[in-house]
Image 1 (cartoon, helix red, strand yellow):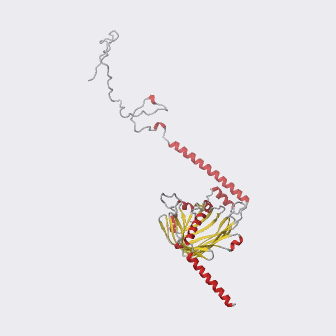
Image 2 (image 1 turned 90 degrees about the horizontal axis):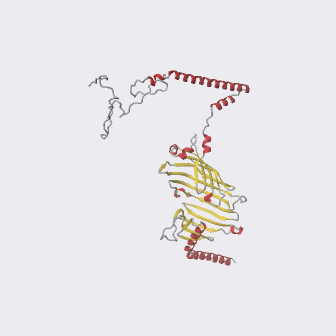
Image 3 (image 1 turned 45 degrees about the vertical axis):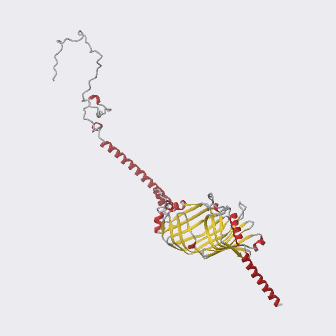
Length: 445
């Protein structure tokens, strides 16, 4: 009996070894790689592309892709002559190996779950992704992800970070929409151990290095919103605290609505540089704390100063009347005494107004006395010295207009020209007096 049992076990083991060897030898690697590419392109509607050098078998019922890369496809217009099957895009991440398989036990309950595992960025990532009748299930765990291998950069900035990233996510996101849709559940934890920014560049300027004593972000699903339960990044360079929520009611992640509050303080060097940026300068409070509010969508966030927080920290000036009344109300005196003080303050104010009015009248009268009389006023100091006749006397007299160039009256007048065709005038002798009846007139040469 024992011999038969041992023989049966040995035969089963040998069959399994032969089966595994045959699968590895005759495994359709190229066909599976092409199938995986097509599935990724179909599910993402052409937004992502998958590249891999080969495929293997992942027991039980799964496959493993080696040198796998996920690309963000550029949907720009293709040039003439470009290959139809060629993919061009931005690399999102690269994994030394990526494995995926279909979980068998969840199928008994009507839930389709795909399990995955990958060796990426010097660490390991594992989790599950599936769907039920009402929710989308996402589970992710990481171990030993090296931040120095993860590119963190943008159009005008780049960060060279170091540390170990740990992600622990367990989410059940509702797939139905509307008021009667079920709520989403779960939590997400992101924590970085030994977080350090060795080098960072913003708009061409190099920033100093920073070591963080705490770097953690935790979110919890409440209804259709992901509330930020804990968000803290603390160092000598920057001390950041986060709050707010992400509204995930839309099925498209790019349309998730944001309302994230950022409150942070900067080191002396960064604070000086922030004063040159108008957006940060407006967000700075009186105590040196910056208040920012990020709104918009997940695909297009918009960050600006949180005006409500900045204004609330600034002191509001009060009028002299409100300050005086406040002093009266807070001195602890009786109501009758407070009323007497109010009357006294009112009488004093009336007296000050009357004194101010009298001083103004006295000043006006003094200016009238100091003003010269009209007869002594000089109208035009630059004009000629002309004696005016009595016809110019009166309240409306005006000084003569000075002669302009070319208007000198002492210049001899030109003799008018006569037409030679006309004869000289003739005079009647009877109408003219006799020469002897006229007085002799002598002319001085």
